[in-house]
Image (tube, rainbow, N blue to C red; front, side, top):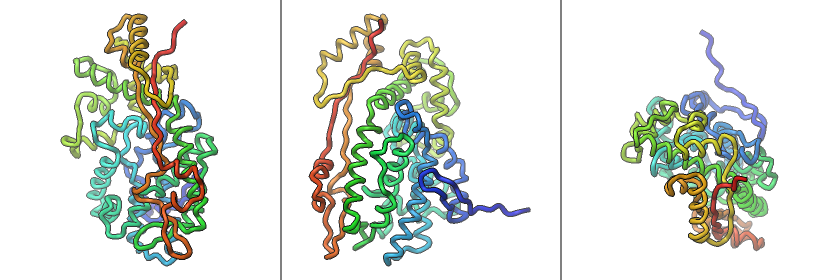
Length: 409
């Protein structure tokens, strides 16, 4: 029998050719849990605003692995000792860091499963795969958890200047066409080094870091927290909430077996077993979209209209401002919609709601981005920069929104 070539080269629209470094990583990419990421959108429902934003978590994970390979090469060139085992573990950890995302990524993080974030589910997937691969992922899991004795390895996977952020900003900028997010990830990686087991950026890279943080802020306001995406994702959360309520009342809803399981059962951290994980692995964007296409003709007013709004992109109106909206304003919209459609106040509340959004490009005192001067002095980026705006970027900005139905003529 002819042996299969596992040292493949993939063509990526952002970086060009990506080489799969070894057979183990090839087998991980081929695994059904990882292949599922082809069916999980990277940016939720942002394609309703930016038509090109149809890229997936699969794209993103491969891009992160490519950047990690580059980072290891740069650090070794600068004399940082990284063993072949550590390099492989880094590539595995960053490749699988998002494997626990549910349908539409962050949009439904706590709608399918209660109070269990995607990082926890990613870790569960990694531990299951580790059993299949006879412990080959043990070091990767230690680094992912932050339990390995070399802290800078964890910072490459989860930090304020990690390979995850360096990829998603550049990739999301490319697929949305929003040029403000296009960072120079290659230069940022080239400027990395390690001092006392901590990842730092050489002084020459200070302006690239400034650009990176500014790009992050702009991408959040312009893309990730775009008002239309915000409405759509809130509607999606309410679709699942209503579907669960109806199922609890004994109403049967047409949908896939995997989705039906999570509608019928309240899954929390306490009962998230291996069997539940296997069912979760069968759930992706297609289950939700197919479900909503069915529910758009439901007898239930709420489920029918919420589903139709997303399917047909006929969304609620949204207003955003710096101060919270008064209760009176919200109540007026609720009463108007209730009267016009002859529904209960509880049902009307699905279509009128308020919320907050927050944007903080840089978190001081949380795995800081430190600049290394030629004098060997290490200074936090906010103190090192002469860019006044950067100090403002380290403070959270909160805005308030209200969503309500458009007036029908």
